[in-house]
Amino acid sequence: MSIFKRIFSIGKAEANSALDKLEDPIKMTEQGIRNLKEDLDKALQSLAEIKALSIRARNDANTYQAKAKDYENKAMALLRRAESGEMEAAEADRLAGEALNKKKENESLMNQAKTDKQKFDGNIDSMESKIKRLRQQISQYENELKTLKARVKVSSATKNINKQMAQIDSSSTVSMLERMKDKVAEEEALAESYGDIANESRSLDDEIDRALQDDTPASDELAALKAKMGLNKNENKDSE
Image (cartoon, rainbow, N blue to C red; front, side):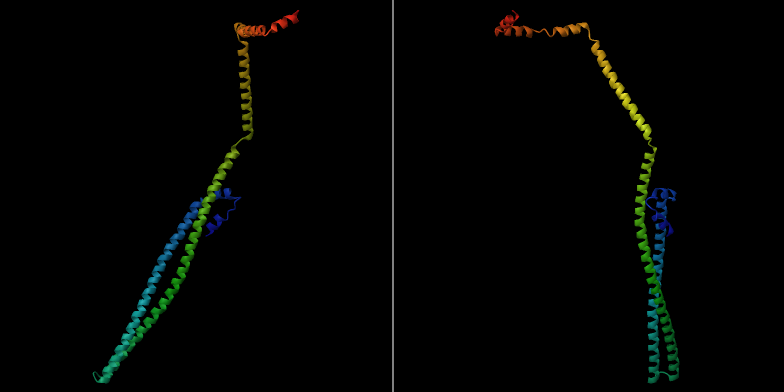
């Protein structure tokens, strides 16, 4: 019983360290339950044997009682024969006395069988009570085993997470992020630089063509429209 008290008294705050020190508490608890079940099987076998003895004692008591009654009837029959003259009185008395002795002997055996039955019945009651408690203990420990398995699973997962967290170097992580930021900024600046170089590398012909694109037929159309509206006259007067 001490192993169960030792296992299930582990505090939550000490779960990880305590479970590490135990010699596989799950297997130890399962073995304890198996031992209890073996005890239960033995107890059930003993109970069956005691019940068999009780039944045998009951049957013996009934047999001895019937024999005692039979010897009494035979003694009475012998005395009736002597009274009727069918046999000598002395012989009848002798045989009747022997029959009564047999009756007494069987009554003694009957009483002993009844006493044995009472003793066996008392043992049966005690054994059944113990078996009931044993079954309750097995059920209780099986439920506690489920709880223990859950606690071990949680504590193991928590331990693994804590180990992973403990192995994380925050300073190196921050340093790595800063280097990544610098690298990105460097790449962005380099891209912009290449863009400027590309703009500066345009040919002179490209600049000329671009300048000429501003002198489009649209300007001629605009002058014609102004002439039609008489706006050029006003511009000429202004110029005079």
